[in-house]
Image 1 (tube, rainbow, N blue to C red):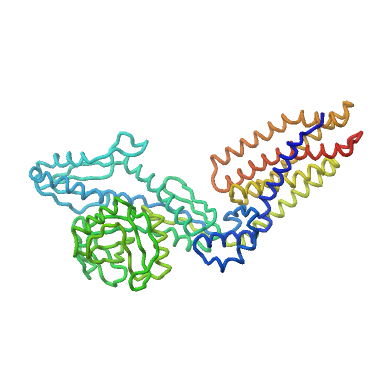
Image 2: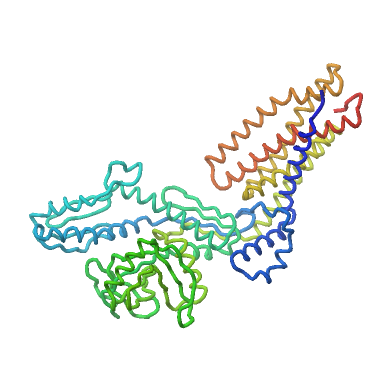
Length: 553
């Protein structure tokens, strides 16, 4: 019998209403976007009174989720960056020197004195005064090796130790270099994402490409140069002991030392110990602030491990200068006046308020483990996005109208039911995209256009099956019932295969391909729902009221 239970009818219409309400904010995109931005500004500590008018542009009791516009629709910046992983090799190998030095000094009675010799950036060359004990010294250094922390390097050590005459040479092993490369790119990826999230941009695309490259696309950013300024600074903060201060830029630092220029004092340089006491990795918080003279500064706080090392060093070196180094520039070199046990302090310098705020953001997000080379950069203007949106609208409207006319001419009143379901279907797609916070790109619009064409397929199968059943002299009610029943398997099979294709595209694709896969997959789900449930419910309601003796399909 042609019958649908009351609870099913309520559930179907409730689903339609909820989906359309979720899609409603997209019809008032600019107003809702302004409302959302004002709320975000208030949560970040902005002036609530000054933003009240913007908040009132959209009712709070309505949903405010929007379909985010991608880079090709909104405009923005595109960067392709390559991570300079070799920078990390030098930092890793230099950080090992204090531990190796302290261990070998304990064996001084046997191996004699040790001296760090100049060499390549990626190696330590240690001269042993007792040349006949160089193998013993190398064996001791090998005892400091640790297993490589990666699946590909299982069973390998992180350092390779060799001898050359009276010298022990320490390098990172090949397995450790591969593991370091992977960790460095992953860490850079996460830090770039944190920095972009800190400045409140919408739906950035940040993904790895190849072994050492990262693709960054951020809608709404004014230029590629602005984006580079946000993410291109390594913001590597270290606290290093000062050996001496000089005005001679040609000063040759000793082994284990480095010459670093002063940021604010023109022509001044500092000779520092290369091994830092603490680094920016030990920071847990950094906030813009003001010093005792009211000048912009940055306050910081270390984690327990960093606080302990910082406190121990300040306790043992009262009266000595201590350099705060940011990106290989000394921004401050205060003299330690007293023990600092709390693990917190303040970075002063000739900052503007904007610079102190930006530095705090960079330090909170973390230091990039290595520098970036920008291989490709593009700024996409919003006018290009407007043209893309307009072209997408035209394509969607043309496809939409063509399908509506075809269905109405081919199936009469039943075609009108299918057309109403198609309009509901488009609304449900946008409702789901808003609900999950998806980003709409040009390929995504193509997916919606394709869905418009595919959405009526299920109705066509049903209506043609009803026609076949009417030819067997069955009554209208029985023909409708059998039409939906016998077309169901074909509808499910056809849409499952297409949905599997969408899932595969999403799994193996990236960027625009994923945008197409998302809209196609959601469109299949909503199309099946509207064809099987919504259209059938409209046909049943019409049939119950009119009780026709014949059907014109």
